[in-house]
Length: 374
Image 1 (cartoon, rainbow, N blue to C red):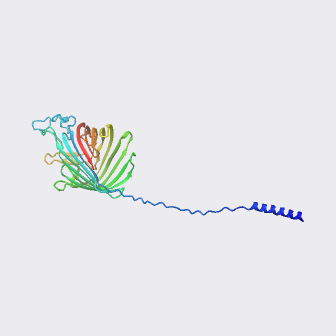
Image 2 (cartoon, rainbow, N blue to C red; image 1 turned 180 degrees about the vertical axis):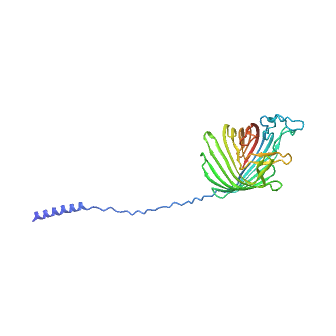
Image 3 (cartoon, helix red, strand yellow; image 1 turned 90 degrees about the vertical axis):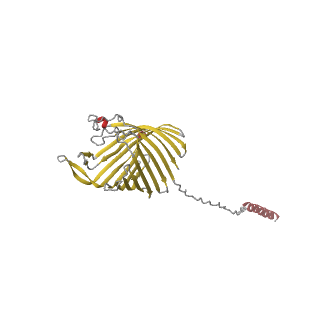
C-alpha cells in the first residue's frame, strides 16, 4: 500500500509539472490613443496686378541732301524754259534739300485702349532761284486709336491731315488670323475697312473707299526680317476722271467715277550690332523693298486747259528703294535714350511707271533724335 501511494504521488507531481509547462501567459494589450494635430490652412490670396498706363514720346530731326547729280544747274533759254538738250539736268531727282521734324507718341491708356500719333513737319532747305525744284513743305498729322475687343479682334480709327491739307478718316476691323513669333510667317492680319478723304476746301474732289488691308510679317535666315501690307481698294470719286484719249481730236474720253486699285508693300530689314555696352550701341541697318507697287484699273488722262497738253498717269507704278544707315545710341537712363545717324537712300526717284521706271540715284541723309518711355 505504501508503495502504491508513493507511485500515485509521483504521477501526480509529474502531471502537475507538465500542465504547468503548457500554460502560456497571454500578452497584455496596452491601449494607445493616436492624436492627430491639424496644421493651420493658410489660404493664398492672389492679388491681380493693378493696371498702370504706359507710353512713349519720340522726337527726330532728319535732313535730306541733294540726290545724286541734282547739283547740276538747269540751263535755260532766253524765255526761262529749260534747254531742250539738257534733259539730264531737268530730270526731277526727287525731293531735295529739305528737313523733317517728326514727333511720335503713344499711350496704353487702359488694358484695351491705345492711342498713337505722328506729326511730320517738312521744311524746304533749297535755294529758291529757279534752278532747283520739288522740295517738300507742309505738315502731316496722323492719329490712331485702337480698342482691343479680344485676343483676335481689334478696332482701329484713323484720322490723317496730309501735307496739302486734305484730310481723311478710316475705320478698320482688324482680325488676327495667325501669329507665331520667330516663324517664317509670324503674323497674318485681315482688316476690312471704310475710308473717306476730302479736300481742304471741302469741295467735290473727295473719295470714298471700301476694301481690306492684309498685313503680314515674318523671319528669314541670316537675321533678316520682312513685313508689308496689301491694300485692296474700291474707290468712288467725287470728280470723274478719263481713262482714254482720242488722238485725232485731242479730246479725253472714257469718263469714269470709280476704280479698283491694289497696292503692295513689302520690306526687308537687317540690323547688325557693331558695338554695344549697357549704355552705348552702334548699329548698321539695312531696309528696302517696294514702297509701294500700285496696280490700278485704268490709266488716267488730264488736259491742261491753257496749253491743251494731255498728260498721262500710268495705272501701274512702283517705287523700289534701299536705305543704309549707321546709327549710334546712348541710353541716358532706363527710360530715356538719344541717338544720331547718317545714311543714304537709293531709289527710282523720277520715273515710277512700270514700263519705264528708271533713273536710280543716291540721296544722303542725317538725323538726331530722342525717345522717352513711361
